[in-house]
Amino acid sequence: MSRIVALTGGTGFIGQVLWRFLEEAGWTVRVLVRSSFRPKRQESSSTTEFVQGTLHDEKPLHDLIKDAEAIVHCAGRVRGLHSHQFEQTNVEGVRRIVRLAASQQTPPRFVLISSLAAREPSLSNYAWSKNQGELALEEAAGFMPWIIFRPPAVYGPQDHAILPLFRWIRRGIGVQLGSDRARFSMLFVEDLANAVLAWLDRGVHAGRAFELHDGKTGGYSWQEVFELVSEKKVWRLVVPASLLNATASMNQVMARIIGYDPILTYGKVRELRHADWVCDNSALRLELGWRPSVMLKEGVRRSLSGL
Image (cartoon, rainbow, N blue to C red; front, side, top):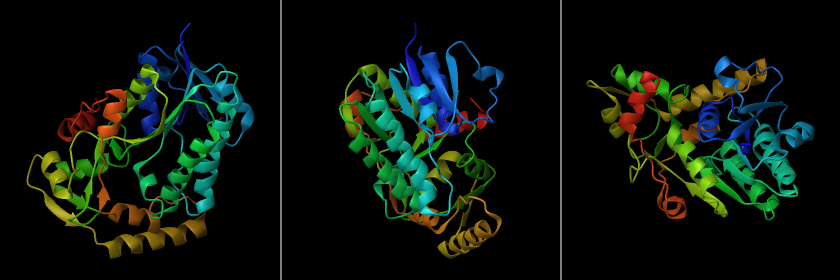
């Protein structure tokens, strides 16, 4: 009988890759899904189980984690106008599932997929909520083994956030959302999945947060990304902070009027304009022996070709 891993956020961009990698590694993956979810043919297999529910309901969470050897918590809110929206999912959602897991007779191993934004909680409601979610895990875990991964900008096939920027660069237009002095790390989604598997296989306790990136020490500048991704001369289109803030202001007003959850807010602009999103792999390498395998140029090629 294969081992059971409970997975939240399995229908998202990162979650789908985690799901596939966990199955390929021999795990039975039990996925938390909404009632409206209808599995595609490739998502239905003898090693997949579905539990309908949300992070706000204890009954389905009990069903999700029952007899699980591990939990990979990838679900999270990235859109919203108010701090309480992020808090409900990214803080209280973490606290709820951690408490339930820690109370099991044999607590499972717990992986929290957080964000590098947690390093700068003052920038946005999202960043604050990811930071507080990490603290909620630490406070509620008790003796349960756990680890936190803080990935930077994650990209790959089926990514709807970064991949469009890569496509524009390939067409010769480099849209620059941050300043010239900004530097940032990046990570191919499959390397993140391999890091999760490495921790599950090693059996170490960890009990802390780890940053991880694609191996480019010191991260990238916008110009370096343009040069690595492009196959032709790139015309650089620098979007000024004033335009980003004006767009965010309009977006927030319309969100209040129409009632939708915006992605571009003042807080998100502060995240985009932050000068230092550079990671350090050394602690994770010492802990797990993990090393990234896909640098940006190869990752972009694989992402744009759908591999």
